[in-house]
Image (tube, rainbow, N blue to C red):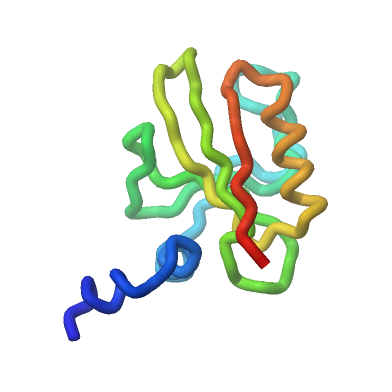
Length: 121
């Protein structure tokens, strides 16, 4: 069976897991660092991108990295940024419910609107 036939049988969550598991995660904003242009935005978790992927901004798919043991995409943040005039999805990898809430609080005061889609149990 060709790979695309196998992939077509995977759920969105399984495909996201496979994408992250087969990509290099590059952390360019470690937890506790500040946003490069808006210093009041402090990253609560490690944040970076998946090398050799393409997100809505033409760069690598963004990823938040948590501390949960399960190697799965725990949630997806769907964002709309009127400043950049784009929309993206950002994977939350191995994030606990508390870490998902931390990321939601990170986006709350920003002009970039975000809605969190949590992985079903």
